[in-house]
Image (cartoon, rainbow, N blue to C red; front, side, top):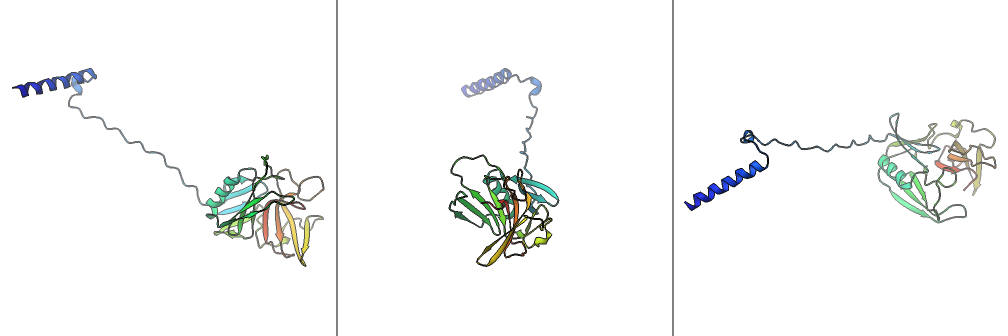
Length: 230
């Protein structure tokens, strides 16, 4: 009988606790409501880049005819490298350059024919498009990882210099001869605050195409680059 009395006491205690918790007689025998599991929202994967445009203000990444992203030369090199890697795949190597009389030491991040140059300024600087960009870009290929690369006007490596509007205007085309090889340089788009033709007062800086040897076709596109500058 002692065992039976113990069970009765335990049962009574359980009912008392249920009453303290606010349970009603109607609740007895009812099923415990289920709690729906919350589903975390998933982020959409950005559509793959189908073309890259080298512009006076930065790299423009397109999906079809829609611009997906633009990374400006005043933004960090880290942002530029992430965007390029997303577009064409991981870097294929790097190369360090020492400082010169006109430029700080720098690192070239290589993506086959496409190069992102990261300058290492001695002191903290305010990045701009003309003299102290956070990074610059160049390409010696018309496409990398099957992604075409062009200027805003549609020029690519392999295009003729004659396709450049105004290429025959005075002072537009600059040439240089090294070891009897003539190279030609011409700005095809000015960076914000820059000009296309050197005038001695303003920075002639922007998207430059190079033809080596002259008369072409175009062998290199780079930006932001100074014409008659470092």
